[in-house]
Image 1: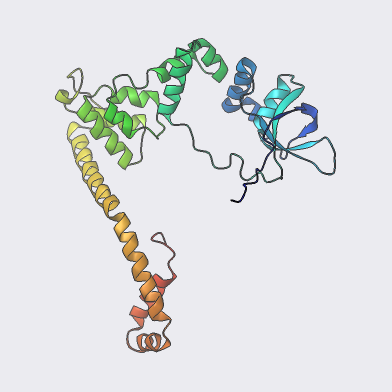
Image 2: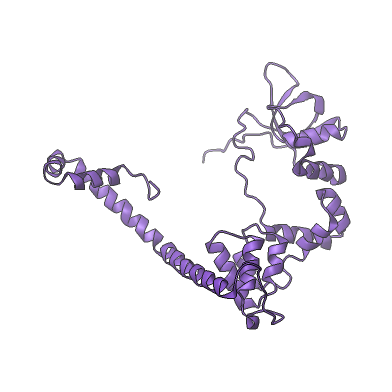
Length: 292
């Protein structure tokens, strides 16, 4: 069995911070951005969690080029650190490091915060580490309160605000699922959309039984908008169900047409008799996917 060669040294090593050189300049205003302040506060409060990724500079022994972790390096320097733990890569390929990131979903973040608090970390310390107000932590902690499990499952891999969740929890479970499906089909998980759906929800589908009003939009307009969105949602589901079969049919048809056009006699016949069909066949043969 062939061995897999690691692209980095397995054990992190501690390197003097002045021996690590940034591979690019920092954008203007980075030091005042919210993201940088969160990273700086986190490092100051709980230390560096993820080592920097570096590669040796062959021409200068003992010096390293930074591949990943520029904001962390800047934060460490501002905090007066003299040494930094680094993961040493065996080449200078930086493309593979954090260039394709799966952002943490809101529900995953909620569970992480709850787990940290269950282990004894106070909301105040979390707020300080993340450089946010403690009320923000409280909202994230209570994100799923009042949200039915089925609606939460639909939102598992998505990012949405605590304010949107506050709108959804005012509805009864059946309506929650319906509204979340509508928002997902429109790919619009915004507070404004949730508020509009809440305003269009009949009183019997609300937890407190009191219908909402949305300024500038009548109840009839909201009902019509919701009917249209429901119809769009149904059409989307139908397309989604047939997509796999449509792709397979397209691939098979394209392969057959390509073979037909490879026959010079058939191509000549089509060009002389039905050039418009030949033009369509050539477009299909040249298409790489359904997106073309």
